[in-house]
Length: 311
Ligand SMILES: O=C(O)CCC(=O)C(=O)O
Image (cartoon, rainbow, N blue to C red; front, side, top):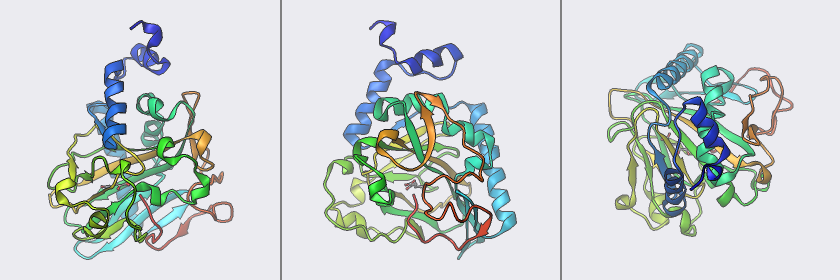
């Protein structure tokens, strides 16, 4: 196949020396995503980059712990709870890219576009930018759900099944012991059989199987995504997934970015326009994403632990 068939993004990556993907690899990723509802791409980011990401996420967590309770500033939010086992615990952050430059660059890195472009094109908005930490000893876990339930209000999205990709950049190894992501391969292709309880995805303790079984699945249908720092996982908006508590002695941090074909989404920050990464505006410029009150309440505000559904 001649070089004119290599997508523009790939040609640019070859020149800069960043990780590239062959056409076969790209086709395999797209095929896996469509057929199984997820894909895992190894070594997208290198050791030095992962070390920088890890420093940034550790710094963010320390900042959260220092404040000691949930707060938000515009779309930036820190989620801090009182864990029954370890006490004050930072479980996650929304839009950490406002606080950490490395995370800001990562969300619009050309390698992310390489993974997204065959699925949702080159004009992309972003509605999820999130960190999840599973601190050793904590009870934090994520209940089984399809991301579709969180894409609210529904009228802000069109053709969600073909317009949305959730990504997770692996910061700490994901292992059998530390609450690796669990997916039900192929579940995106099956029509929902039940109503999701809609109670929010963050839970404590062993994750209930109720939703899984109401959808006709059991533990034998779960696939664990074991992955290394620098790997990126993608999943479909209708893929059932969740994760158990961390039973190991090491932290498990995941950096989650959710992207939408801009033609089909009325909310979110720009991530790419014609394949060009778009930086975040200053934090005091309100941008409508999750919070309907963003134009009224931009300054720092202490908040209860979120009760609304989150990723
Ligand atoms: O952090 C995790 O293990 C789960 C992430 C997740 O379920 C999501 O982002 O929708």
